[in-house]
Length: 204
Image (cartoon, rainbow, N blue to C red; front, side):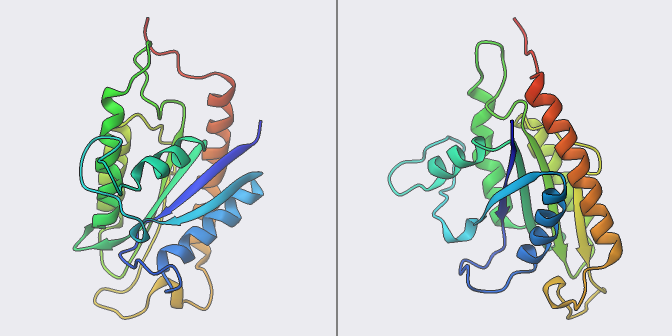
């Protein structure tokens, strides 16, 4: 069966027409996944949606999370992308992670959360230190909520300290970023196919 990935852009910019370095990084990953015959079907600008605060799968009228949740779970791989702010993942990324907390109480009869057997990777951009710290926070939250994290699961770029050059402004993607994206896509695609063929058993 085909492997599909969904990208979430957790920039603070709600206008999808506004250029985003996260979009630029997600484009690098989309190309790398295409080489592995994995289709990134869509990039969702999360800040353009009304994702209400809370830890349930539906926070009531006007909440856009239920539809986004359904879309996320219809894919095999989640690409959670976002910028570094104050040395941490963006508040938008944290909102997504908070809403997935509901998975913990939504297990099937074998104790598996809805995300079991699905993979998640991270794309991080910023002009300050914090890529490793941001990825660590993201991966711990994703692990807590049932996602499988493959090897080499983060692709990131950080500019010069206190600099003014964004990833989207680079004339060429750095070779190391491209190589990292290719390894990420290879590992994730391989593991996704293995899990699709043989899902986690859970407990009786």
